[in-house]
Image (cartoon, rainbow, N blue to C red; front, side, top):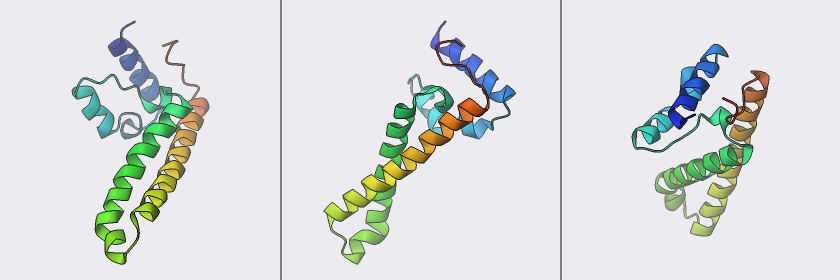
Length: 115
């Protein structure tokens, strides 16, 4: 089965489970797919994959935003800003990975391989 066929089956299963479309098909996934990346819905990704992807993008984006709006002018060191961003990213990533794992179990979603 091709990636596109699995993606359609996954989106159908997620829709039947009454999971909001914005939750299982967020704008970043739509954009990355249009750019040619084969991005699975997060409910079908591994815990570690969800943890790493959420940690990296959130820690980076939040850290840059905070650096340019608050931390730089308040005299925070770069080392402290990087550590704070790292921990914030890991915290966010952990909770997002837990959420998607719990949601997939609660809704009895299939594994990606069995779609």
